[in-house]
Picture 1 (cartoon, rainbow, N blue to C red):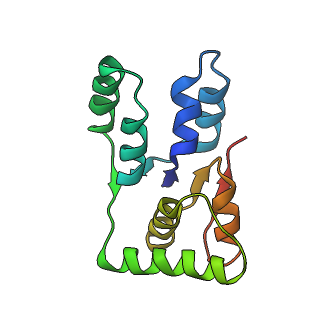
Picture 2: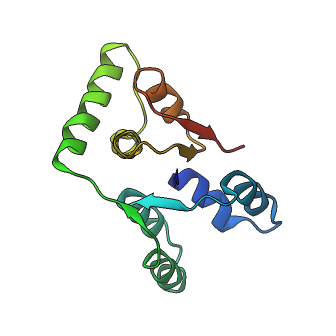
Length: 131
C-alpha cells in the first residue's frame, strides 16, 4: 500500500503526454494506493469549473482513504512544532497531517513536495519522491 499525496495527483491528472501517468504506474506497480481526506479537499478546491468538480468528485468517491484519529491531530501539530523549533517552516500544516497518517499506518508516501523531505528528517516517514 502506498499513500499518494496531492502533489502527485496534480501531475497525473493534468498529464497530457502520458509521462506522469507512466511514471506513476511504474512506481505504484502492483501495490494499491490510498489517499487522505486532505487530498480530496485539495483536489476539489482546485477544480477549474463545475464539470471538472463533478468528474473529480465521482473519481474521488471511488477511492480508499486513510482516516485521521484523535492521535493524528496532536501528532501532526507536534511535527509542525518540532520543525519550527529547528528553524524549519513548511508551507502547509496539512502536510504534517498527511505525513502523520502515513506514519500511523506504516505506509510510504509518494510525493512531489519538499515539505515531506523535511518531515522525514525528524520523523520515521518513508518517502518516495515523484520526479
